[in-house]
Image (cartoon, rainbow, N blue to C red):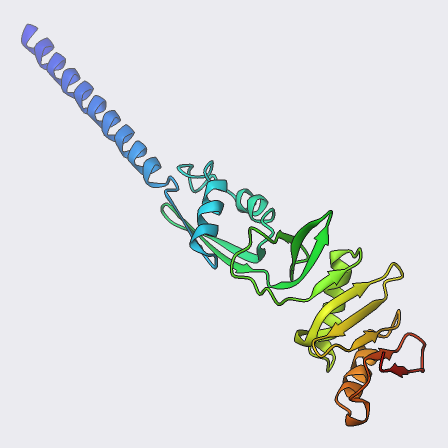
Length: 231
């Protein structure tokens, strides 16, 4: 009788050990699995090394979080605040990497706001002139107060026209949303309030017409009228 009870005790003891070690192994497995799923690498393409470093600092709170618990919104909120970025894509690479592909905004012009110079990006955002590296210092300068979206729209019209935006050295914006542009060969073109496309195409023909080589001002402000002068 005592022998059977001893056997039972041993059986219960071995069962206890089996359950105990199984629990430990399961716990270790789960902990290892969770550690493998923690983000330890964020790969960014499309930026310079310095720009990547600055952006990675913004992602500091995301590192070592579980990749399954991180959503697109966590990255979108940070990336949308960066004025250098035109567009981006974010992909998870399991078990612990994030891939971010960035397309940078093009610098289109230079402007001055409250005595501080900015670059106007193709995304309609302003980039601090002093902090931006490797930009084209020959970009046209915008004079006058203008909403960035209005400039982006005007730039789009110029690109659709026969006129080459690269020939512009400065742009003047007026409160009635009218534009004057000055070319690199020192010709001032006064555009109307509307119908930019037709006016730009017409001005482009005048510029390359040998009959008007000596003229410095092309005034197209009045519909169906053209005033040309050499002053």
